[in-house]
Image 1 (tube, chains in turn purple, green):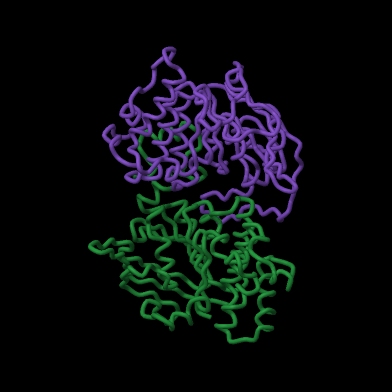
Image 2 (cartoon, rainbow over the protein chains, first blue to last red; image 1 turned 90 degrees about the horizontal axis):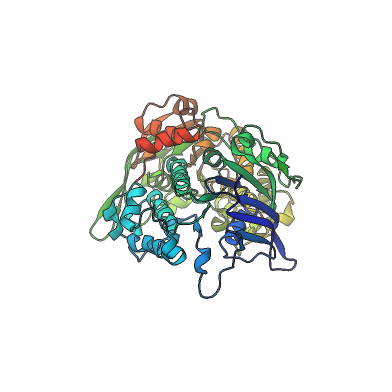
Length: 281
Length: 282
C-alpha cells in the first residue's frame, strides 16, 4: 500500500483530574488516500478525543500524529497553521457547527480560502472553485449560497458542512458522528454522500460513529475502540459478518434490526468488562 | 386496571400572534391494554406532540380538538387540578434524556416518593418501602441507601431505569415513553428494552413507545403506527409494518434503512438510493 497520508503512533490522552482520566490509551493507525476508515465504539471509548487529536484541537500526552511526513502541529492561539488545514472535520450537529448569522456561500468560501492559502500556485484546481459550484456538487441549488443555515434541513446542513470542509481541499476528512443528529432515513444516504465526495477528491476519510449498521456500508476498514484502545481492526465486511473480539460481538449483538421480528437485542450484564488485547484481521 | 387508550381525530394547532400552525392533523389510534404500541416517524411528524397531549403537557399556545380516551375518561376534557389525578397516577411519562428529566439536586428517594405520597396518600415510611420495591423492579439495587443517592452517582442507563421506576411508582395504567433509549449506548439500550418488555408482560402495563429508531421499534413494539405530517399514515402489527408495509411512506422509510428487508445491504445499494433521491430529505 502507498504511504499513509495520516499516521497515528501510540497516542495517549489524559484528561486532568485526581486521578487523571486516560481517554486514549496507546492508539495507532494509518489513513491512506482514497479509503474510508470507520472508527466505532460507545460513549467514553475515546473516539471523539481521537478526532480532536487528529485535527490538532488537542495535544496528546504521548505519541505522535504524522501528517504528510511531518508531525501535526496543535492549534495555537492564532488559529491553525495553514499547512495543517489539510485535515478537515465535519462535526455531529450541523445546527451548531455552521454559523447561523452567515450566508452558507460565505462559509463555503472560508474553505476555498483555506485551500488557496495552503496550496497557492501548486493547486491542481480540479475541484469546484466557487461556493455555487460546490452547492451543485452536493446536489443543491447554486442560488442557495445566498441563504442562511436555518433555511435548510438537518441533512442539507450536513451536506453544506461537508462542502465547506471539502472546499479546503483536505487530504483527510474526519467526520465525528456526522450522521447521528439526522433522521434515520437520511443517515445512510448522507454517510454515503460524504464518503463518496471525499474519495472523489482523492482524500482519505475517518468516519467516527457509534452506528455500526451504517458505518459498515461505507467503510473499507473498521477500527473498534473500547476503553481508549483499539480492540479489533480489519475489513469492515469481515468484522460485521464475523466479529472476533468479545467486545465487538457484544456491540454487534446489541444492535436491534428493523426486521419486524420483535427480537430483543442481546443483553450483556452491566459492568461486564472485556479484554483489551487487540485482534487484527 | 383498564389501560386502553383511544385517540380519536386529535388535532392540535400552535397559535402565535398572527399565525396558526397545524401540528396534529387528526390522529386516530387505538391502543390495546397490556401492549406496547410503537409510534414511529421522523422529526416533525408529531409523534412527541401526540404523547405530550395524552398526558396534558402540550404547550400553552396549543389549541386541541378531538378525544383521548383512557378507559372511560376523556383526557382532553380534563383541565387544571383534576389533571393532577391523572398525571403521575394513571399515566406515567419517561422522557428521552434522564440527565435532564431527573432533578440533579434532589435525592432519588425524594423524586420517587413525593408523587407517591401525593397520589396514594401514604405515609413517608410506606412510600420509602414502595420506592425500594420500585427500584428493585427496574434493577437498581442498594435498597434504602439508593434512596439517599443523587442522579449524578448513576450512569445514563441506570438513570433511565430510575426514571422508569418513578413513572411506574403509582402503578399507572399507561406509560408514555418518548425516545427512552435514544440517549443510551446500544449495549445499555438492550438492557433497558428488555426491562420495558419485562414490565409490560409482568404488570400488564400499556406503553405508548415513541421512537424514530425503527430497529428499536422492531424489537419492542407489538403494534406500530407510522406518523407523518401530524397524522398516522399506517398502523399494523410489528411484523406487518416491517415485512409488508402498505403505505408508500412506510415503504420508502424502510428502503433507506440498513438492516431492513428492503434496506441497503452494500455500498452499491446506497449509490442506487442516492441516484433515485431517496431519504425523504427536505
